[in-house]
Length: 304
Length: 275
Image (cartoon, rainbow over all chains, first blue to last red):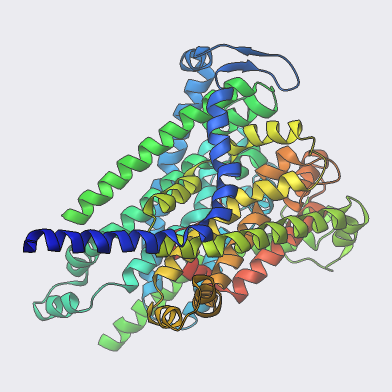
C-alpha cells in the first residue's frame, strides 16, 4: 500500500468517526426540531399554499394561482404601505444608530454610578411595548398631553403628533427611537469593550488628537459591531408592529399603515387570509433580501 | 487652569449622561404620576406633575373591574409554560447543535428570529380553528414557543460552544453515556447560560402582544391584550389605564433591575430579541 492511499484512508476514517460522533447527538436536537417544524416551518410552507387561494376566514376558498400576487403588485394601498415602511425604517434606523453610538461612547467612559445609569438607559427596551405605547398615546394628546405643554414651555408651537397625517410617522419613530436605541447602545458597547488598547497608546505618543483617535482607530475597529447593530436594527424596524398598532392602528386614515399593519388588517379585520398570505410571502422575501444584502456588507467590512 | 478645564469637562459629560437617561426616567415617572392622580388632576392644564395627595383609587379600580387577576393569571401560565417548555427542549438542542457544529440548524433559528411574528399567525390560526382549540390557553402557549424556543436555543449554542470540552471527554472516557456527560457535566457548567436564556425567554413572552390579540377569547386574554382593550373602550380614564399599564410592565422592569448583567450578556451575545 502506498503512503498516499494510507493517508487518505486514515483521513476518511477520521471523517467517518467525526460524523458518527456527531450523529450520536441527533437525539438532543429531535424534540426541538419537532417543535420548530410544527410552529415555524409548517407555517412558512402553509402560508405559501394559502397564498394561492382566494380564502376567506369562515367563508369560501377558491384556487386562484398567482392572482393574489398580481393583485398585490397593482394594489395602490399596498404600494403606499411599502413606501411608508421604507420611510419609517430609514428614520428608525438612522436615529437610533447615531444616538446609540453616542450613548455607547459615553457609557464606555468610567464615571460614578455608571452601572445604575446604564440600567436605567436599557429599561425602555425591556418594558412591555403595549404599556409603553399607552403612556405615549396619553402624552401625544393634542389638548391635554404633557408633550405639547413641554413644547409651549420652550416657546414652540404645539403639535398634533399622531393625530395628523403629516406628523404621524415621525412621531411613531420617536417612540421607536426611545424604545430601541438601548439595544444599539448595548451592541456597540460590547464592541468598544473588546477594542485593544495598544493603538491608542501609540497614537497618543504620535500626538494624535482625541478626534483623530476616534476617527482613525475607534471607528474602523468598531465597524463590524456597528454593522451587526445596523442589521438587527433594520430588521426590527421593518417588523415594527406593537407600538404602531396600539397608538394609531394605521391611522389617521391610512397615514401610518406600514406593511405589517396592512397585513394584519387584511388577515384579521377583512378576513382575507389568502391575500394576506401573499403579503407575508412578499414581506418575507423583502426582509430576507435585505438581510442578505446587509450580511454581504458585513463580509466586505470585515475584509477591508 | 488645567484643573478648571477638567472640571468643566466633567460637568459637561455628567450633563450629557443626564440628557441620555432623562427620556427613560421621565416616561416611567410620568406613568407613575398618572397612575397616582385622580381624573381631575390627570386632565388638568397645565399638567399636575406631583400627585397631591397621591391616591391608590386607580389601582383599586383596575382590580375591581376588568377581570385583571384572571388576565394576570393567564399571562403567568402562558409565559412560565412557554419558557419552561422551551428550556426542556431548547437546552439539549443547543448542546446537540453546538456538538454537531450544525451551522445550518443554527441559521434556521436565526431566520426564525428575523421573520415578523405576525407572519406565523395566519397558518397557526387556521390550524387551531381546525383543531377546535380556540378558546383555551393552549394556542397562545404554543405560539409563544415561536418566541421562546429560538431564544433559548440561540443563547445555549453560544454558551455550550464556549465551554471547555476536557471535563466531558474525561467523563466519556470513564464510561459515562453522552446523556450523562450532558446532564451531569455540561449542564451544571452552563447554568449561567440557562439563567440568561430563562430571563430573556420569559420577558419576551410576557411582553408579546400580537399572538394573544389574535388567538385569545374573552376568557383567555393575556395582560398586554387586556390593557390594550382598556384603551379602546375607556379612552378618557387615564388614571386606571396608567395603573394597569404600570402593573403589566412592573414585573419585567424589576427583573431587568435585578438581572441586568445577565440580560446584557444575553442580548449582546447574539442580539436575540423576541419576534
